[in-house]
Image 1 (spheres, rainbow over the protein chains, first blue to last red):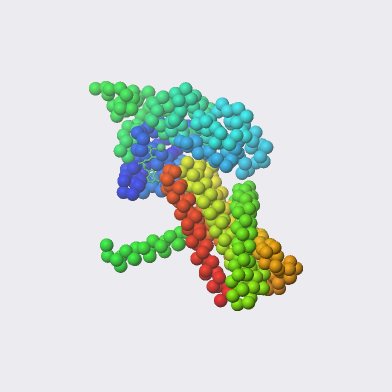
Image 2 (tube, rainbow over the protein chains, first blue to last red):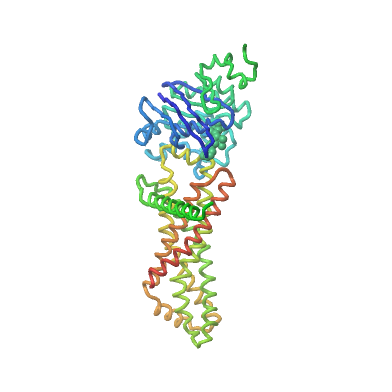
Length: 237
Length: 254
Ligand SMILES: Nc1ncnc2c1ncn2[C@@H]1O[C@H](COP(=O)(O)OP(=O)(O)O)[C@@H](O)[C@H]1O
Ligand SMILES: [Mg+2]
């Protein structure tokens, strides 16, 4: 469904991505892991057109994602940002209903927003708070509600559990798994949390030195030598 | 390095910068569909309404001080009765728009740059794109139009308050007769004096909003990046206003 090939990007002469090849199938949940600063977020931003890649191709349903095809892609897309990225001039429900309010009356959009907030475990009393009044975990949830508010076909999660304590992290993982299974959405999750990978992913890819160094099904990763450093166990001989 | 090459490079980057800002301004002003009415309304309040106190106070004290200056300066050539006319012309043509514009630059260019810069570094601008919303239309267009439309109104209000400041000083401490002062003001003030000042206000409003939006959107990463963006926006807006004032004054009155 989404296919990336030969993706290259450098910043000021410093290569970050040097030939990334990656594919996600319809309804599949792919986790991309890698150390901090290896270019995981840059990879997502290139797919979204927020960063212009130096070279490479990005296909969506077999066609290149460009100026003409991207609006249709974005219309069925949702993303949870690393810092939640809620609009701090709008209330929580206005954030969640951001897309909906552009085509339906406020009362109706608000009702949907409250329903989506409930889906991520936030009560209706949070609807009228400002994002600055939320804790980190609540902001992540609200960001998740905004990402799924318009029933996207493709969802990206950028480090969904970073900065959360283990209990909240597990809850977010379970939420994401539930949402991805329930909606049948295609998902790409960026993380360096192996618990997230086990909870969320069908398949996993390791980004290292600007390339995909290993790729396979989640159950296979325990035996994969390139992942040993990540899993904290010694590589099998 | 070779000085000729250095100058060439500077000229190139200056030209490129002017081109980019011009394009940014035109896109911000004229790509109106879809128009985000709510965001525009919020900016009318932020940029226009909430700037009234600071612009009003500036005008009041400027008009009052101007009356004192003209009175004492005019005494040197037995012309201290020109106070009402000079205060009115000085306020309406020059000091109202320039000082009002500078106060708006301090208040609005900084807050626009800080707000948009913070949105950029916290990925809120990227989030807009993922929600199928163009940041130019959502953030820039409402601010540019709100500034272009409200700053002339602010200038107009400032003109009136400034003239009243002069009138207060004139009647309370310089011994002018109130009716005569006001009659003198309206006798010497021409329509073009007022209109030219309001036009200056519209241009200064545009300069302020463009500087705020441009430096906000091109803010560097982190808190330091936002700080630099804010500073650059205020400096550029203030210098831009003074330079544009010189050019416009030449255009209007030469
Ligand atoms: N807009 C940018 N300008 C310059 N360098 C950038 C930019 N975005 C990312 N980088 C650099 O690219 C590298 C990868 O960043 P990122 O994708 O955010 O890492 P991560 O894998 O932790 O998400 C980092 O070294 C970062 O400094
Ligand atoms: Mg990242």
